View 1 (cartoon, rainbow, N blue to C red):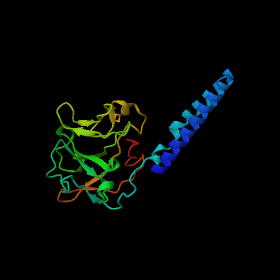
View 2 (cartoon, helix red, strand yellow):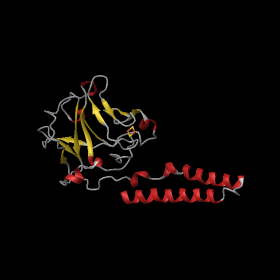
View 3 (cartoon, rainbow, N blue to C red):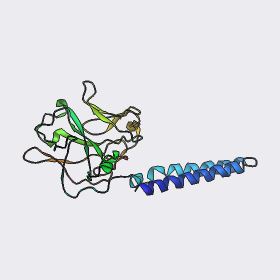
Amino acid sequence: MAARFRRFISEITVLDLRMSETIKRRSDGLSRRDFLKLIGAAGTGLAFAPFVPFGNFMPNPNQASLERVPAILPDGTQANINTYPVNHSEVITYPATGDPALDAEAFRKWQLIRLPAELGGESNDVSALRAFSMICLHLWCLWKYWPDDGRKRGECPCHGTMYDASTGIAYIGPASVQASPSNTLPKLTLDLDADGLVYILPPKFTANENGVIGYGRFA
Ligand code: FES
């Protein structure tokens, strides 16, 4: 995926360079009509940009498990609804490989949030939990959940996008003005066992299901 994305970007760059060259080469004798043709061609290319399946180029992890797996907290224990505090978040890794270098990749990082009480966080079932990709949908910085009074939302430190803790929808900042699905964070589907232990169900990384990391999800 990453290689396809790089190839796509390099093709756009080559096209851009060729157009620049043409304009430069002909700058002395470039007629107004030729110039307008070039601008028209560039405009046509941009008009089709929304229909390019950018999600296919995103470096989503491809080792997603076919079985549910435990949601492991940074201290190595499995998250449990009976002990996980209300209005609290920690970073979990999915899919985890056991290789420290791979597991450190930002595209494997998710915020496991137990919602604040006013958003249903006191329920002792899976409805109290959310797991959203930490990759901000604007320019891929890492956002995090802030539990403080007056915040209780995801915030990106780079350009100020704020995410609703319950829905993962950007409601302030640059990601909030991006067209759907690029205004809504990808999520993991969670499950509990009889003891309250938290599991991650097998995701489908498409925009219509769990979402595409770095690209978004149709809410
Ligand atoms: S990268 Fe998050 S707001 Fe720009």
